[in-house]
Image (cartoon, rainbow, N blue to C red; front, side, top):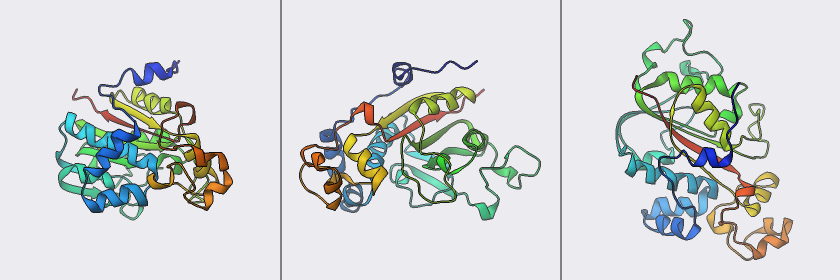
Length: 254
C-alpha cells in the first residue's frame, strides 16, 4: 500500500530548493534578453514564469545546459525551457508520428521502438491533465528516457476546463508527482509549486494572468471580478492557493 507524503516529506526531499519571492524572480526576469523578458512579463501566466525560474536554476546546478538529445512530448521546439538547455538535437512527438500517450510504448505495437531509452532529457508541460490515464502517460516518459536521463513535468494543481474534449482533470497536488516518481523508481531532484489567491481566482474564472497583471492596483477588467485583489500583490506565494506544480526527476543508471 502506498503511503501518501505530507507537504514536508515532499519538499524536504528536494536536492535543490529556491526562493519563490517575486523580487528574486523579478531580478531574474530583468537578467534575460529583452525578447524573453517581454514574454515572461506579458505573454505567459506567472505560474509558468516561476517554473521557468526553477528550471533555469536547476540547469546550472545539475549542469544540463549542454544536453545531447531532448524530447519535448506533446509540445514544440518553441518550448521556453529550451532557452536554458543547449541541446544538440531537439525532437518533438506528435500523434501523427505514432506517439500517442494513451498507448503502451513498451508494447509490440509501438512503431517508434528506436525512441525507447534514447533521450537524455524529456520535457512534458501541462499534458497529463489532457490524457485519461496519466500513470500510463508518465510511464511512457520514463520509457523513452536514457538511464541517467532527466524528466521534467509540469501540471496544474487547479485549472479551468479548456481544450475540450481532451480534458480529463482540473489538476493534481504536488504529491501526485512524487507518487509517480516513486512508482517508477525515479530519483527526485526537485519538486516545485506556486500559487496565489489572486492568480487562482482569475485562472479558474477567466484567464491566466501574466506577471504585470498581478501587481497591486487596477490592471485589467478582470479585477472587477475580484475587487479585493486590487489591494493584493498576486505575485506573492500563498501555499494554500497553489495553482501549478512541476518536478525534475532522474532515471537511475542501474
